[in-house]
Length: 250
Ligand code: PGA
Image 1 (cartoon, protein in one colour):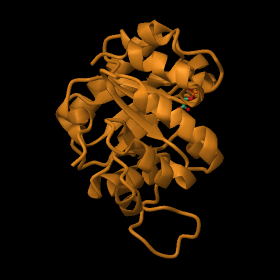
Image 2 (cartoon, rainbow, N blue to C red):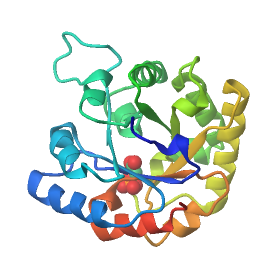
Image 3 (tube, protein in one colour):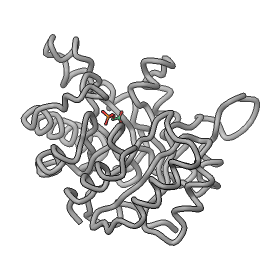
Image 4 (spheres, protein in one colour):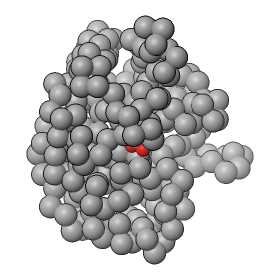
């Protein structure tokens, strides 16, 4: 069985490649990540097309494999979809669910996100359940309420906190180059931890995501309540990603 972040107190750095990566450049990127000595937990989430080769390149390393989405159903007539069982079969330890790009571009709602997370857990994967407010919601002082509602709707009721990770990703911070402030991250993470602890009995691990780079990673990873980071753009550049890994606690 793969040893995931739950079995340790280590921070976790997860790379979300999104719809990026071709064979040749990805092999070089994975090679650099594997060769980099990491004290923290590390995972990479390539697109489905690269899961198999990346799994081969990761063989023998401590870097975990993850995916960016899964279907809520076991199998069947769902053209173009991939099930949690298939991801597990491919060697994945993690799957991102409810990313704001899925919520916004594919109309995924909390209920579906919860069903996907439940499917992931049922197949021994750790879902990385993403939540986060839009700029409009933050400006209207609704950020805490919006995220709390997402948590209530997106985490399967029966899930234990050790079975999932959360990622707080303010929508306006994703890919914008503008990470949330340290104060906003600290207060949102505290709110998430308190809310989920009341719902599920123990404190969850919460990652921050949104314009994390090697230069802001030490400050972000130093904030109380930040259990790791979910990294988009910077996970495609070996030097940046390795710099973030260096900033995470082992
Ligand atoms: P970013 O993306 O690091 O490019 O802002 C983060 C994410 O979408 O997970």
